Image (tube, rainbow, N blue to C red):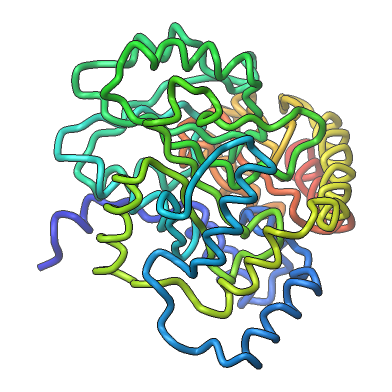
Length: 393
């Protein structure tokens, strides 16, 4: 008999859609995958060379649970350079991806019955990880009309005596929305009144932005002592499979994360850690070519979406997703298939247009779907033409 814990855990919608797409591909159907948040670039050569050097230098033993000392020093330097944050190595924990970093934080802070505030749309695993920690997710909704941002008034209205943690993600997955410094200050003014609430700031997409300056919540002095800053190298450095994430946090939280990690995975991959040092210490202009290409694709996909009747899109300022509102099609029957919700819409696109996307339900917004433009311009053009043809034929 399986545990109640695993029974209560939903499957990842992004991975489920990718699995359905693979199944159709195995049947010989030409599927264009726009469901996964994975850069289609190769890892930059200078990072690969650092990994090769680490192999030649015989880095093959267990690494420290919380990461190599010189990697943690590099992370502190990165935090100071890019975010204006002062962290000491004792405040840093390196993990097997930012997902583990987030899970560590939730496991060490949350008790059964605690409430976690999730401004929607939110990354699919936030609510699932909160569930694993036996906490309750409280969704704070937003819409395309508000550029998928919540207001200070909404935040305050969602707070109860059980609120323990709020999770922010900017640039946002799935909407591409970026909270400005002023907007975070306004939200921070609310949280300042509730000293028992902690803030997790997921900044994994910080370098993939198109002109709106990135701002870290922990840069607000009044919130520094209860903010956990989460980051990693997967997205900006095209290192998804290398599985390195990290936190900067109050030292007592970092020590607790080190303790739980020591009983679950221990230290992250030794070669990937050495490569990450090279990635983080490099000037950010070395990855600008990827950001520039994502920006071109953003313009391309927004223009093509605008040609499809009924779809509404905001203009994402970061990450590599669009999150169009597709509710225009709810209740309509197309090619004999009735579309009642975003789940039906995403499945329709997979089966009829042979394009894999992800339902917005997974992200806390049932009116939208997520489309990744971490794909070639040719694939984007072909995919959007297929979608257009399927919907208006």
